Length: 630
Image 1 (cartoon, rainbow, N blue to C red):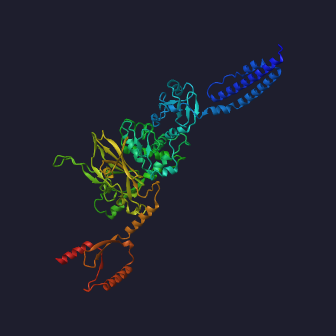
Image 2 (cartoon, rainbow, N blue to C red):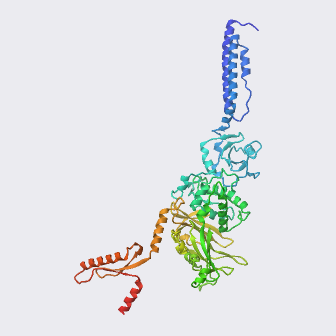
Image 3 (tube, rainbow, N blue to C red):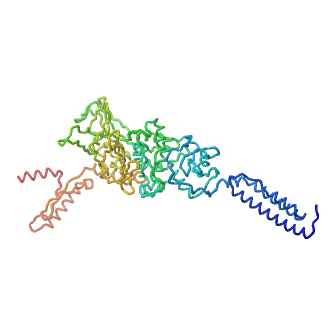
């Protein structure tokens, strides 16, 4: 080893200390740069070479100090390597991402079936937030990984757990600005939000600036799927079923029914106030329907809305009976009971006692009632015009008043009356009929009230006490326009928070007057009983008021009271309820007191100022007066 002078050694010592400090700073900066990089491979540290080069020019004391500093740095590096797992976990959950600006929200569409656009697999599917296409996987050599390298689209979202990743770096992104995308993928509601849907007015705004009302949004027609759209829009106003679907959670059920799962997701998207587009596409739901119904209801083939409604309600009823759901929401909403009296004789004339004993009475549940239209006129009028007949719905409801007998194909006569009224009454107006060659459509217009449809005459007298509320309000009306094979269905929906009617024909949603609803060719109608509260439960106050009114009617009806004015004016007729009057003795005492007061207040001519004469039949009294005058 070559000896050095004291001056040179001191200078070298100072230079060595500077070099050691520079090498330590280099090591620190290198370690911090490694912590910032998440997915790059760890490169070997160059601090040892720097320390060896600097130690060669150091004095023995300085070398000892440098070796001690190297020993401390090596111990710190060993301690940092022990916590590498925690750092690696922190690296994989980066909160900031430089590619968030490439997301295109106006292209995102989560309504399609969640399958890979290349391999059609439904496992581990991710959506590209730049081009809105679906790909499988996020590891190396997967379709999403290759798409990120080829197209330079780096941000993806898992369609099942809503976690967002950056590919090909493969780290999770946590940013509050992405919550609107997560909510559009899987909207969620609380019980409080659901209870306010029927009372609170909510407006939404799409990304293009268009306004829409959640719950009254247009549905995309995927080619002859208007039969499904009108049923979905009509079910949105059935409050108990709608609330049940909005709060439905099937995450804890393995192999859940695909129809129930997709229907719940579709219902939550229809009521999403933060929808990017303001419209919803039922593509995923219709794909599941096509598989479950064995292509009976599929995209590209027109179908009957009544048949689809019946199939859907039966499927929901069957799936809701799962032991973890244990719900009978369909029966609570739509199920009623009809009393069928069957006999071998006609009931056109008055029944005899023997015929009444021979009839067979059965109670049959129903989900909807069918109303038969009279045959349309074949001949034209005097002006050579095809007249469109009109008939009130009350004439069609006489089928269920228990007076008309209907002969079946087996030669048996049946009479129908209702013994249990449902919360939501579904009426099917039989407008289409098949013959040997083609399907015919009856163009008869059915006039109906939008409010207060009373079915008291259709309820059996023995069951009036069990059904005190017999009035219904229309909430959905499905009509058909055009020819039987070329026509299209549209729906009229009642929006309760604003008390307005909307005409919904696929994507077109317009406000209409209630008078125009009654002029359409109705095919299906949904009525809501008047005792249903905005939350979907039964309003007991309305039920009690209806029972009191029913008891008053059963008390004896009404009597007419005729009054004569003091100055010999015209007679006035008032109606007084007998149920509100007292006993006969009390009435006689009141009449005597009134006569005494009238005599005391009488004029000079000795005529009484006013008299009250109670009569039981006003028309017979008038006829007697006419005969006396003659």
